[in-house]
Image (tube, rainbow, N blue to C red; front, side):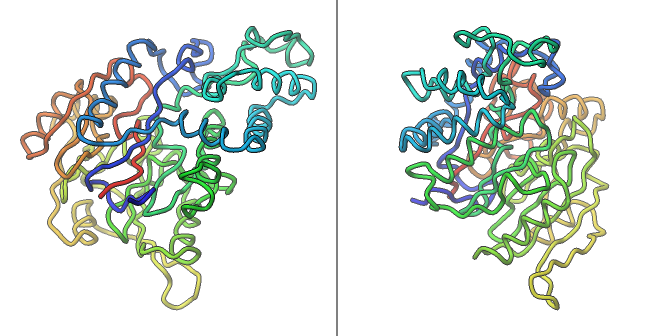
Length: 407
């Protein structure tokens, strides 16, 4: 069985990566919510129960569930030098600039008996009060009233964004915000050093140190040779061109076309998959604002200049665009139906963000009852999961899951 294989959004799901919410959510405070990209503070105990229910739906449907902290700890336990390198890189990227504090923090992270506990601590954020013998050493310590040595990563349970599986390879994201930029360190170590998923077992189509930002929520694999990528608040056009050149010229792939969809640049439309996801062979769930009018561009190999791209605007509506590349009539299912108020409300609560278990069968948030009923009427089976706490992070079932293998 392939270690990584994603050639569609809808093939039978075999393996998925999740991150169970942890102490990073309890390190959210009202004062720092904006910096950490949250609008509210989820209740961790209930968020865990909701996430366990979510994971249980995968397992009941025969899907192998992997957890991010397990893969990272397995990676670091495979080689002591890799673990040492990870700790130093983590501290540098967490802006621990004092040489003395860096030594103190290195000793602290090495003091954990279990590597997994250490990894989860790096995710949770490290409070000054937790570090033995912590004292104020720098001007910043005295002036800035900030409780953390290293920031929490509360967005980690949205495993879709820090990296993407494309075909049999990986695109490691360069994240748009400073708060989320450190999340990609985990994928970088997994896909370069893990006993199963690392050691050059899969090509890396995009590196986290590339200049332009791109995030996984904007990347949809439509079929063996076509990707849809959102030009969003968080994914820059130059990143799409860089990924296209790697897929078309620098690696042996079957991909021939990227459709770049230019979507509104706002928090509610942060990624393409917040307004547009595939739910069946030729059925897509869409928000009303992108159903009729969306700007799209086709990226292909230039036929005249070796190594160059051809970019062509596509002057068609969304259903016509999809029909052109999927070679079949398309059904667009409206999130929230024709009621603009319901559509906007349920899109905000991730009604358009679904994860497919198999063609015509998806996981959805139960709170989006109007959209869920419309999906049923369109022949789509829905598995509803509770989401009162998980949805506070502004991400849905697709955001919370990174498929590794689909049939």
